Amino acid sequence: MIVAIPAKTMAEDYYFDNEFRLGFSMLDMNYKEFDDTNFLLDREDGFLPGVTGEFKFTGQNADSYLFASYHTSTIDYDGHTQGGIPVQTDTETDIIDVQYRLNAKSSKQHQMYGGIGYRFWRRDIQSTGNVSGILEHYTWSYGMLGVKSRFFKDYNSELSLDFRITHMLEANMDIDFKGFSATGFAPLDDKSVNLGKKTNFRISLPWRIKYKNLHTWIIEPYFEKWDIGKSNVVNLTENGVLVVLPECGGVCGVLEPRSETRNIGVNFQVVVPF
Image (cartoon, rainbow, N blue to C red; front, side, top):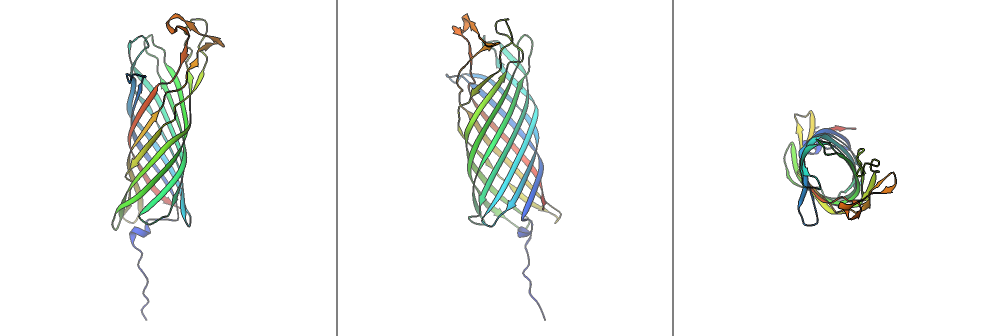
């Protein structure tokens, strides 16, 4: 007697019910700040190596993803003081991103998804010469809507296009003046401002590869845009006393100008089923 058993293709075999994805990442960060006349105030550029981790939980009608990444390095700062003196220094940079996504199984080829995320950015501009540095902590939550579409598939790999729209929901920045005094009376007090919320996007090409029946890898090059709107103005104080200077025309204030970030990166992940 001959019993026919359907063969399971490799393209089906390298998908698992639940997965843990661990890997490393490289991010090329390009950041610019502008005033109200679109004059470039400063910019930061550099490569940030990082690590990523992701859990995928398979459901009957939708798959859940919990993703986190951490990038850190020292990048180049190029700007100038309020008096117009050029400043070149370094910025110690840390970026943490956490996301939860829910992918609806609308078809084998297309998946619509939505989710929420949280982003933390530590921007520590170093002092140089007679110019004092500043420490800024950016935090924002965001919502996302996207679609992932597979456009190529063969025996041991598949390539997809992943496009998402993100919108900032709550955005703030904490400022530490690192002991600088505007009047010589006392160090400036720490301040917080509300950042302008913008809509942004991310596009990527995740390539899933089965290697010699041993490991499954995901290689994902991507481009992302993060624009941030100008913040509100907060009065400067020293020990709670308003800072009043002639060059400010009275009470001095601080704000965060609008900015544009353009990131190009690639994630490399190994898939561990569980």
